[in-house]
Length: 273
Image 1 (spheres, helix red, strand yellow):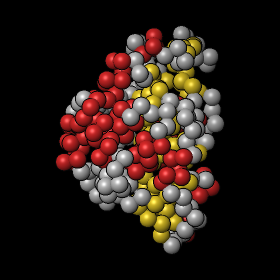
Image 2 (cartoon, rainbow, N blue to C red; image 1 turned 120 degrees about the vertical axis):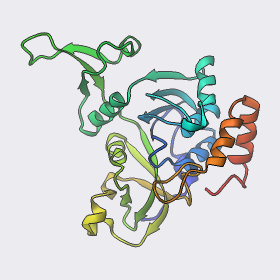
Image 3 (cartoon, helix red, strand yellow; image 1 turned 30 degrees about the vertical axis):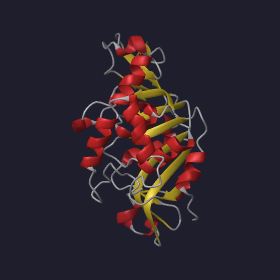
């Protein structure tokens, strides 16, 4: 396998694309996120599986996003996602509200090649009034009235995430992060940044084969050392709390956020990734 560069991966995502993102607790490719900002991509439709934080907030603040489909965007213990909030208030971004199970259901439907997935948990919520693409029907197999909500399959054009390593054949180790597999199954293309490429075959051993995204899914891979920074990558490295606090402070105003971009995204001395 010949790896791509992070910039090449970013260049392959056209304006207006639907892009699937993992939660901050998974493997977020912040290196690819910064490359997208530097490229100046516009009009992205982000689908967060099922939530997001700094990754979505950074893309929104940089003007890269037109639509967000999510059950929540927050910086967690560091505070609110200020750029997301500002864009929501100004109408700069369109938000498709969802719940965590609803987002997962849409991805599972696409991964299984189904047009929709049925759920009951949304019945009685005000989400239905704001999601005309969710349809309520009666269970055709029930003897009595039994309403169900049909959620259309979510089929992103791209899925992007960061993983510890890939092997020489293009298999990517994802461990217990089965959401990465579902993302790859649902998306047309999967873009992955990794810490390293190892000269091994992940499929040759049971203990690694069970935790890998097989090369058959066609993931496009680029090496990005500490590519999840300033977020954590599983047990390999912790989140950079000082930097996340800095981002939270600098994202409070548009002027300070632009200063953050200049120093930490566009500058050649932007950080470890």
